[in-house]
Structure formats: C-alpha cells, structure tokens
Amino acid sequence: AAEGQWVLMATGRTPTNIAVIKYWGKRDEALILPINDSISVTLDPDHLSATTTVAVSPSFPSDRMWLNGKEISLLGGRFQSCLREIRKRARDFEDKEKGVKIKKEDWDKLHVHIASYNNFPTAAGLASSAAGLACFVFTLGKLMNVKEDYGELSSIARQGSGSACRSIYGGFVKWCMGEKDDGSDSIAVQLADETHWNDLVIIIAVVSSKQKETSSTSGMRDSVETSPLLQYRAQTVVPGRVLKMEEAIKNRDFESFAKLTCADSNQFHAVCLDTSPPIFYMNDTSHRIISLVEKWNHSEGTPQVAYTFDAGPNAVLIAQNRKTAAHFLQKLLYYFPPQDNDLSSYLVGDKSIL
Ligand code: 2P0
Image 1 (tube, rainbow, N blue to C red):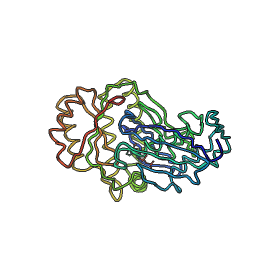
Image 2 (cartoon, rainbow, N blue to C red; image 1 turned 90 degrees about the vertical axis):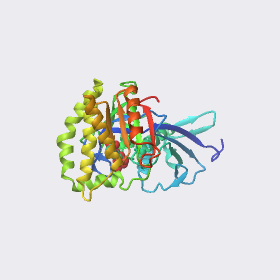
Image 3 (cartoon, rainbow, N blue to C red; image 1 turned 60 degrees about the horizontal axis):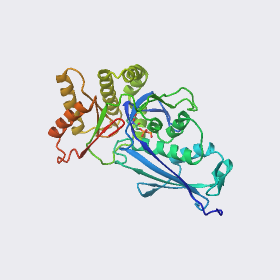
Image 4 (spheres, rainbow, N blue to C red; image 1 turned 30 degrees about the vertical axis):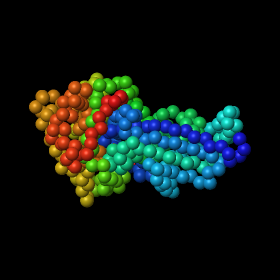
C-alpha cells in the first residue's frame, strides 16, 4: 500500500478483577509501587470487561483516545506511560497481504488511536481502570508485535493503574509488591487459572452507579500520609493474610476464603475511616448488606457468602456455589427490592462462566 493509506488495528477484551486482599497505598507514586501484596479474582470476560481497539496509521497526525465514545486527553496521563513502555519493546512487523512493513524503530513515528468501551459504569468503584489499562497494554502489545511475557506486561499495566496488573491473567492472581526501587519485581503472578474453583459465583449488587467522590489514587495518597492503621495493616496484617489466602485458594477452603475476604474488606474501609479527612466509600445500604450476610453466615454455622467492597458502595458477594448464590439472591431481593432506588440492579455470574 502507498504510504499513508493503511491502518493497522487490533482489538482485545479484558475483564476486571476483584481484590480479596486489598491494595491500598503506594510507596512510589510515579512507578505505582504498592506497600503490600494483594490478591484478586479475575471475573468472567463476558461481564464487567473493557473492549479496546488500537490502531496505527501513517495518516494519524497525533495520538488520540476515546473512552466510551468520548474523546479524552492523553497528555501526561498514565496511558502515556504504558504507550511509552510498549513502544520501547515494539518489534519488526510485516503483513505481506496488506503490503505493510514496519521496522522496530519506525513504531516511534507512528501515532495511535485508541477506542475503549466498558460494559459497566466507569469509576463507580467497580475497578474500571483495571480492565481498561490492562486491555490497552495487552492489545497495544499485540499490535506492536511485543513478545514480552505476561509478568513483564503486568508490570507495564501497573504503571497505568496499580490494580490493572492483576487483570493480565484470568483466575486467581497475586500482585507481588516487590522490593526493588525500579519496580521491575512488582509484577502479577497467576496463583491458579480460571478453571480452578469455578463453582464460585459472584454477585455484584449495584448500590449506586454514580461516580465516586474520592478517587482511589487521591484516597490512598491521603491514607499513606495520615493513617497510622495503614502502616500496621501493610506491615503486620497483610503478609500473614496473603499466605493464608493462597492456602485457602489452593485447597478450595471456602470458610477461610470467606473469613479472610470479609476481614480484609473491613480493614480496608477502617483505614479509609482512619484517614484524615475520613473517606466514606460504603453507605447505609452497603452496611445493611454486610449485616445481612453476617447474620446469615452466623445462623448457618459456616460462611455461605463472602462480601467485599472497593472504593465505592457496591457490594461484591462471592457464594460457594450456584445453590447458595440462588438462596442468597432471594434474600437480597426480599430485603432490597430493585424498585427501591437504593439498589438499582444485580449482576450475577460465575467466576469464569455466566
Ligand atoms: C484493589 N482498589 O486492590 C483496591 C481495593 C480499590 C480498593 O486497586 O492509583 O485504581 O490507579 O494505582 O488501581 C483501586 O486503585 O489505583 C484499587 P491506582 P487503582 O483492587
């Protein structure tokens, strides 16, 4: 093809992940290096995922990006860091059919257009940045013929948004905080793939799909600066919890899994309350859902459902199997009828398949 007449594109889809041991606090803001390890479950890609198309063409005069159809600025942002890191690793590419040949060093001169869509509310505390940045890094890597392994890709996605590094893998994933100052060992590893423990069912109770008031980035910065509980959590509590959680996942031990998940969510929100000024991500409906789960689990004698809340009021509920999920959903619908404006909808899915 003649110079300027071709467009090369790649499209990818990446699900979001839900942390069961939370990431909250950075030791390096620029490189996005955390103060503790975290563990998450990557959801089924049919729900709560980002779909991103990246394109390059000699006819594009600048880098541009659209999120859910609306153009957003790329200047100085985190997409820019990921773009730079992927460009550095780009390789020679040739498509004989299209007559396109791009030398390694030529990728620098080509501008990209990025279009990303979330199939769920952006910035409502449903980890939209995790899916979006992971998808962008993965898809751009494919387009630019990058051959780095998933660990390396996770470390690039991390520089876009911390939690994004965990969405590079399916299944159960650990983000190792690492020790080095350059962040090269702050990468995600897969603990178990998506076929492991796939009778778990995840229910997301959308308490509010409004934008959250305090972004995770600024919230965790305030926590690092002001919360004494955060230091105690990162140094004394989380290391032991991570080991126990890895064991629980390996052995499909739902009782330990549920207890650790709920305790860690509650401690994360306690840290938010311990921050000055305090951060309130959960609301009254969130608290009522916690009470419902705690009462039910207590009356059954062993945990049936685990709850976890991120930087927003929406509840993520993890049931041991379809039967308990159905039973629990019935209870939720009874106590929180959807026509009640408080709770707008439910999303239900297996960890891997809906
Ligand atoms: C997590 N969250 O582990 C925790 C639990 C929210 C609560 O990771 O500044 O959007 O981009 O690294 O990744 C949200 O934080 O923050 C988050 P940045 P990110 O999932």
